[in-house]
Image (tube, one colour):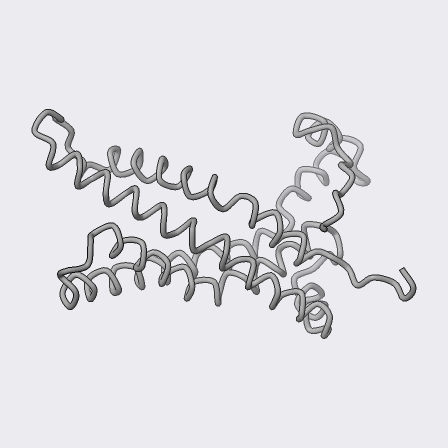
Length: 204
């Protein structure tokens, strides 16, 4: 059973208030909020592009080659496939980001070198397994809700809603993302703890 980690902060407001007590002053505390920004950009940008590209490719192929497959299953499988391949980019960079943000190291180069340690590498591989249980439901359920809700609105004669506008797609995407996030939140916590856990001292 995973031990419960003791909370070191009373909440977001306390964390923000404590910025002025950072060594180096308030400005240094604000700058510290951006720790891990570069690996986070490397994690989200390429992985999002890969996810959407694979999603559209798989969806189109399934619709063309398996017309008997229910539409919801097509969306689910396409979303899952996109997340699986995107995780190959996302998880290593998430591991680097987590090391920087939790102050296990202070630079991108040092975090990368730290993850080359066999125990850290093993943690990253285990985190990838956890990320699969987190990201597949997240990506799949998001796209299922997004695509299914658009289809439902278009086909319902009583709903006068243009789902092709940017605002409509943003609203439906946000709701779908929230549903996916709720489903994947427990595994998100597990993945973060696996990435940041330190090797136990001998005898502990």
